[in-house]
Image (tube, rainbow, N blue to C red):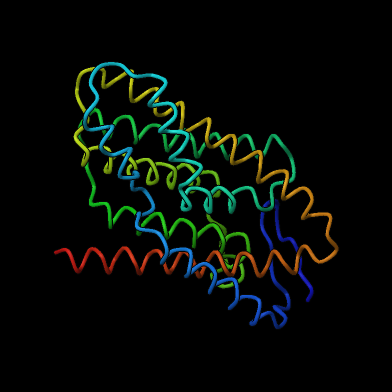
Length: 247
């Protein structure tokens, strides 16, 4: 398979090759993973949910831990972040895009909870699934190849970061946490989210560093982004089905 990079941070497939078996295998593993969990993408574990509802006052350490735990176990966040850095080779580019995502995520999470702005969790999680689809398609150069234009990747990263933040704020609102110590607890939770994001990012960058040295990296990269697109559509379908069923 022959691949060309059309611009910084994207991959333009010239010949897709035959990787059907590998794609189907990875999609199957993904399906089993999704089906084996009781939680939605932005759901908080039952034990954590009860703890959030019961405690009052300022609890900085606890909320930092909960924020970090949410990020490192939030597969939708991780997938989108992976898509963002997939073809970023310079640390300054990684820092820029991750900062834009963090800015969007933090803004809507904090403001959404503080001003009680809730969005149906099924709808917002479907949009988050769309963010994964968008980023993987962007990595494959699909917009240039199919539609003849290239979306503003920085703006898209910021906008989808805003959506990811609303996903979390909607869940926190549902859990009706105590107003006593709300502001410091929210900031502590957000700090935890950023710590978790940095930890996840470090792991991804180390893995990507070794992976990029492999002589078949671009072939694998094409397959990986196809799997991400499939997973994103699965998440969209799952959330929209949940929305219809619960209406």
